[in-house]
Length: 81
Image (cartoon, rainbow, N blue to C red; front, top):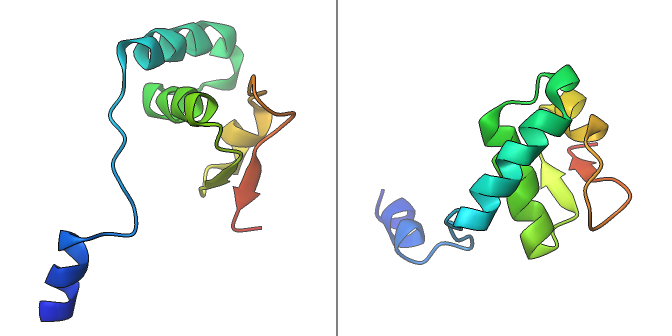
């Protein structure tokens, strides 16, 4: 338990807050991808990935993320493969 708590205090990851531009872009993605059934959290992930130049996503939602065409790369690399 102590090791777990220590990892929480200095994680290897960080939480990235949504900026106003991310929410605006996510809203536009919902309109653009209406036929995919993309939901708001997924649209926010795409917006964040584009802003942060993230090309690899770890997800079990392959259907949505493989159909979205990000602005910063031809397609996301989805993990696990």
